[in-house]
Amino acid sequence: MLRFSPTAWAKLLFFRDRGNSEIGGFGVAARGDLLLVRDFATVKQQDSMASIAFDDEAVAEFFEQQVEAGRRPDRFARIWLHTHPGDSPRPSPTDEETFERVFGHCDWAVMFVLAASGKTYARLRFNVGPGGSVQIPVEVDFDCEFGPSDQEAWEAEYKANIHSVTWPAMPSERVAPAEMALTNQSTAEMFAEFEAMEPAERHLFIEELAGRPDLWDEESEVMP
Picture 1 (spheres, one colour):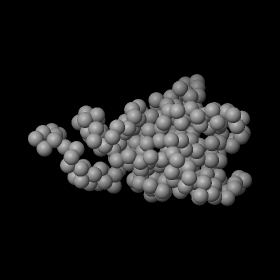
Picture 2: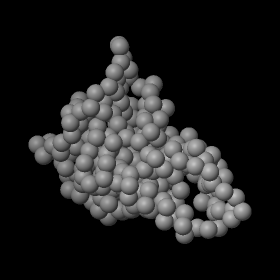
Picture 3: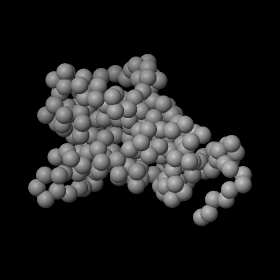
Picture 4: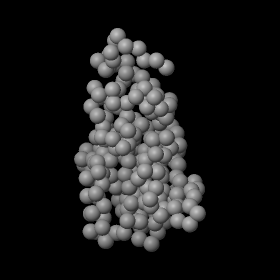
């Protein structure tokens, strides 16, 4: 079971509800209880309604800070937490690709998704022995020790690290300016991103397209 301290859970909810994009970060686990999340830690990132792109230097700095604090990687680099602005917590194809690319080499890792509806999804993946993965339940553990909320500090962290962008970003690439988004993606890639969105996200995406005629070549046609 993946468990959250009430403080870590409150911080995750604060970040989820602060904006309209996905938000990602790392679960910092308790000493001796690696599936108990005591903190939700974010790094600098560019987020859209359907994707998250961490800043590589910020991730490296976060890891260095955690090691200097005396934590081993299995306490801060094994649990990937992120939110979905839609109703479904089911991982998108982009989520699955990111989980494989970033955490595929770890002996174990967890992907957790919290949707705007409050629904959750958690999957434990292990790469030792025969390997495998299994969905696990999620709960807020009110029996563990926990501190108070600190919304002032959370707001400061949000402003420092979370940078929302209009267009979905491919996870292995830097986010391009909005004016370049269509030309940087093939039609197939764009429709794949569109298919992975929740209904509410698709509606917002279509509204964005309708409101940005400058992105389109009026003399060209987009074939299905």
